[in-house]
Image 1 (cartoon, rainbow, N blue to C red):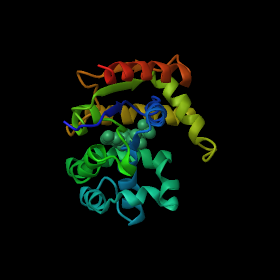
Image 2 (image 1 turned 120 degrees about the vertical axis):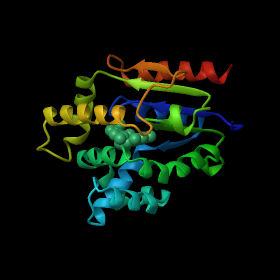
Image 3 (image 1 turned 135 degrees about the vertical axis):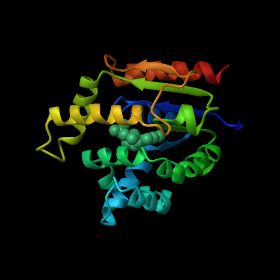
Image 4 (image 1 turned 90 degrees about the vertical axis):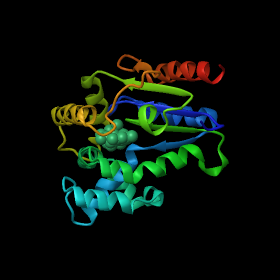
Length: 220
Ligand code: CDP
């Protein structure tokens, strides 16, 4: 148990978890970590070294090289959010040794939030179940696949005019299956997490609902 609050926000791709986690962190002035960026960084690092993400030795070596400073590198950061990187990140994330290599960085962030912040918000797939099982508030954010595909397509199409909505939906469905079906820390709602479906909510409505759930836990 840490002496400061930790908020865990999990859920599938494009469910709105990143937006909500960022807004919660800003609201409480807590530190924020997008843990998906670590898996994405591993994927970019494998590709930059000329390796293959489905080759376990290449992926594990990249995970062992991982350093939080990589996330601040602008060339690197620009490659993190592509559809290809999302796909590759989910392949690497299924490998137990990849997960083991970057678990400490996530726990250290939660245990000692940077910049003297008084709490931390982490978003991902296994924060409530595995990285921070003692988090004071846990949210599992979801939305229907067609809605998530529409949202992700809107984000990605500006940089990739060729990308179709059908491809994005297919990617999301494959990624959901891989993330929920893997043996190592699969994506799942923790027993003590609140489920929030954002399919029919605006960002403001979803944030109001998330904030109410978190405040209730923090004030207990
Ligand atoms: O932004 P989006 O929800 O599309 O994905 P992300 O959060 O950046 O995560 C990319 C991939 O990393 C996911 O599909 C998961 O396979 C993996 N991941 C994970 O396994 N555990 C986490 N805590 C975070 C991400």
